[in-house]
Image (tube, rainbow, N blue to C red; front, top):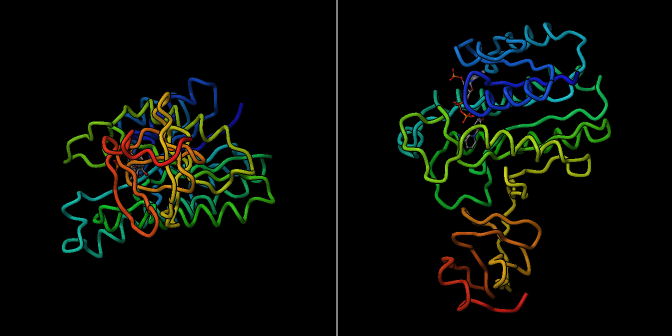
Length: 296
Ligand SMILES: NC(=O)c1ccc[n+]([C@@H]2O[C@H](COP(=O)([O-])OP(=O)(O)OC[C@H]3O[C@@H](n4cnc5c(N)ncnc54)[C@H](OP(=O)(O)O)[C@@H]3O)[C@@H](O)[C@H]2O)c1
């Protein structure tokens, strides 16, 4: 029976991951800072783990002793409400807490569990990050602690991938999209939010389909790759395939709303383009037929 470790499993996406893997017959070790009702409802091994605390991480690693681990899912995360995470409101305390959970936690827990991961050939490390951590994709500002913590964890995941490639461990950075969870309880759910079960199910499929050749990449739950940091602007030709409404770009695209899969951009609401020297935002409605620049 393969073994999976899941952090933050008292809520949201991690709890849905745990239920999915229990259903699939995995030996699941579900951990959270508190053993709340949602964690206790899981029919698996339960652990108290505060990813902010090196002592708690050491104690957790000691409980797993020599157990080989197939999958480590770093899911635990926190965010402050937008109003408390703006340029004029963000505090040292918020930055410290958010970085400890979202950034240092995945690194220090992975470090502590390396012997367990190395004991299983082809093991997998998943880090649930967020698209807002993509520097190239940032077009709306704000969310200082949260964005920066996710940008930094993307950098950490990339380094881990390089360092562990020879050992055969696949590292995947994962973006769940908007999900109805307790992450930001004061705010209205985004209209495109999905249930945690959908996000976890799709991310699981994406993550488990990746080989060592894909290590260190950042994946949207719908399966396409996201940019971590590089500015991806620089498009000079674009077209729409009328039969599918896929946007096809001769170059690369990045914008808040556009995902891309190779050169095919899927159903963006708006797309940032550099056409010649000029950078502009084209709303989808103005970009279908009138903006057809070249047949795909
Ligand atoms: N929901 C979204 O739309 C969305 C979008 C993009 C990325 N994400 C990412 O997805 C991941 C899961 O978030 P979620 O949406 O499922 O939120 P969630 O429902 O709030 O779940 C996060 C879990 O992490 C736990 N946690 C917080 N601090 C911890 C610590 N120090 N040690 C261990 N566990 C800790 C939380 O416990 P407490 O409740 O006790 O704090 C909670 O159980 C996060 O990394 C988040 O950044 C979510």
